[in-house]
Length: 200
Length: 223
Image 1: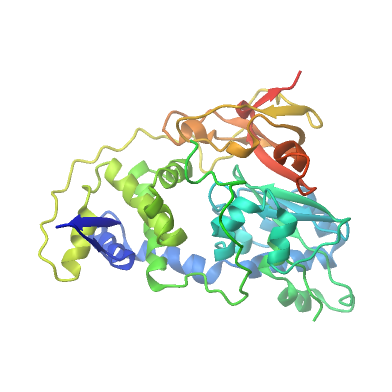
Image 2: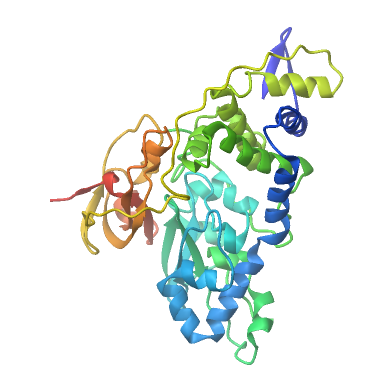
């Protein structure tokens, strides 16, 4: 935030303001730095798109799991140990050669944290939030994904606590790969629906 | 509210930024603490977890506070707004301490008397059970109400007044419109409503479908 002193704008950088708030709350015993650091570690290290990649690879190789995942995403994801804030009710939708789902939150940046971690910068960018519900084909093209004209696009605006996860298409040429070998191929962007998974 | 955060369909933002596969979770050091402090500040101000109140704080930030320091800066500023509104911090307290930290002689404002809301969630999270039947059926045509809500809402401006079809009936959730203001949970069914792009954006729009989650009270019948 900016304040004016003697007609001159002096900005206190947000980094310094962050240190200031930490001090103010810690010295009054209102927060515990250990709890603060625990939150940081959780989302910087423990939770991320590798979780979602494990879900996708299992769905690609285990037809029963795939069915459970599409029927009750939250429960099937929890089978692999993934749950928590921003993942109370996860719905999984499947991309196919003819249907393509992609996810946005126009109102803030809601995102399925337990399977994908915190959202990447492009997802939080006003240009993506504003435009993808109006011209998704153009936006996808700018992001490097060209879809054929006959592919039906469904944009999912995450306006409630329902969270969406895209089950991408398994790429051709990966039939011989085992579940563990498929995991590293699955990208965050494919699970949001702005990219496809590529064969190695 | 029809505020800065409700940007679906607005124009003039320029091109999107293509994904970077190697992007770190936190690009700058301060973002780590800004993220965690925002979560903790919101909990302190609400006396519990109230994501709706936090989102309402974000959407009430001014242009600079919302945009200039990006997503984590916005979170941090939302946390500060909540702390000052609930008198846990005096206005200007963070700035005064920050200036002290960089060696300026600044008098800090006195610590105020906190005024926390009465907040007693009936359960964790936002999923609830209700004993009524859903008001709308799968396949039914519904209209998003054309209303202007002064407080918090999750009904985006761009679908108001438009007709869609109920795709999925989701479980009942706490209603953000009241919960954000500590006026009760009012749980309702949530409907995934499918809109045709031409219904929302006109005949010349790109052809696609759009789904939006609608709390029951956001919808009306089309008959």
